[in-house]
Length: 339
Image 1 (cartoon, rainbow, N blue to C red):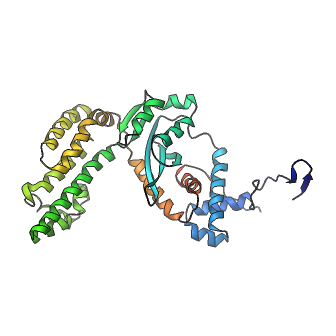
Image 2: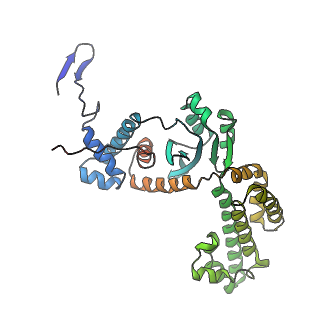
């Protein structure tokens, strides 16, 4: 490639259409490297293409930026978005992810979590893009509501049904652990064995139980003091099913559920019951609009797989670029053979 020694700018290399400025690779090679990283782990790609881990991450970021710049803005025509966080490193290190519910793709991701990070997403939007957002789904994190209120006060804030049920699922597991530890201290081997046998069964939906788990579950009604674990499981299932009912039916059922859970005298259940009573308007709005973060949770699972594939990345920006390549609908154009 020709170079020019400019007295003002120094040595300048001529621009070429088949490589990016500052890159040591052709665009075709970078596209192939980035595509391989979406289907194989970083170590495999680095070894196959004979590049370093750091180089592979930089290439992924460069390709993601190039492909994104060639496509229409993912923020145009947004109507319903979901926000959630996922950990990418030990020590409570998170990435905040925003998805488009209607087009089923990740549209934005950033290092960190909280209102300040979510503000960065809204700052990236134009006034027209702001105005098109009608629904924002998410979990019960306290930083979501104030942020939505500042940037899109007229949008419907939907509390995700997946997380509503997860509050009860977590409480149910705490009940099981307490009763199991109590049975061990009391030397009640029969109850201890039953509690251990339903460790995973109580967290499943009834239709997903194996025959062995169903049999073990049948003994729960009279297991433990006053059947606390069985009653806790019943409350979890009642909550899960009422979220699928029509709004007017669910309204009365939710009121009855809150009363029953609040008076259950099971400490682990009373706490989520208070939270659900406090968030009752949001829960009813969730039932009315029918949006769910289940797809976002599926994306989170795929993102966790991506994090494992990208093990060794030194910069979180490179990891986010790979997430966008795998989950953001970015179309990598692979080089075609010329005949």
